[in-house]
Structure formats: structure tokens, C-alpha cells
Image (cartoon, rainbow, N blue to C red; front, side, top):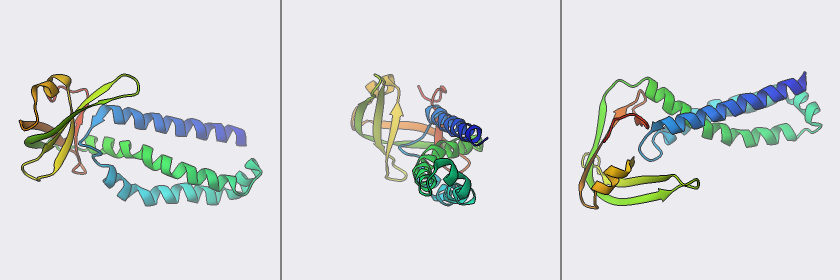
Length: 177
């Protein structure tokens, strides 16, 4: 029975991680959009969930691993992974609760770069200084848009305001030319 539960837990955690990766692929935000917000709201609930589960099942897990320390080591390793893979779910909830308001970033292009992925996929990124907030916003743009902009040109990018106020856009939607 314990082996079945362990295998079930491994499949459940794997599915959770795959779901997080899917949301990361589908939802785009400004550089690390929502990451700080996610950490602020998730650190304590996930801490209580993981270490609470380990505490409640410490005897059963200790017997299963034949070690008192192994369940706690696994909990320590699982905690940062669960925090990391929960961020995309916050972004998905943010997108699902969007009101339809638009956020427009407009300002001079400060920097352009192409980030080369490990699997041959390139990302064209521009940094623009938003005239409203004076922040430098890093945005991924299509190759055609990237080629049409030079440093110093005025760039404009639109995002939707999510339910948590985090700007986002669907990565594969036709929101930008």
C-alpha cells in the first residue's frame, strides 16, 4: 500500500510540474512578472503544507525510508521545487481573473538582444524605459518587431491587467504584430 502511495505521489508531483511548465509556455509577462507576488503569498502555505504533511506522517515515512532524516531531507528538497513550480499557477489564476483592462508600456528602446536557447530557440527581447513609470521593462517580441526597432526608437507594447494586477499576455495570441 505504501509503495502505491509513493508512486501516486510521484505521479502527482510530476503532473503538477508539467502543468507549471505548460502555463509558463502559454502565459507571457514582463521579465519575471508576478514572481515576487507569488513568493509573498505562497511561501507560508506551501511551507505549512509540505512540512505539516511530513510531520503528520513522520512515523510512516520514517519506517518506509528506514531513516528518520530522509523524509525531512525530501521535504527540504521539495519545498523550493514546489515554490518554483507554483508561480505559473498564480500567473494562470491571474490571467483567468483578468478584467480586460490593458496596460500599455511605451518609451524609448534602451537595449535589444537575442537570447539563444539551449535547444535552438531564440528569444528576441527589448528593454524599454516606460514613460509613465520610468522603469525599464524587458519584453519578448517577435523577430519582425525586433528587426523594425532600433535603440532610441519609441516602442509600444500592450499587456492585459490580470486579476492580481500582474501584466500578462497569451504567448500565442495575435495581440501584437
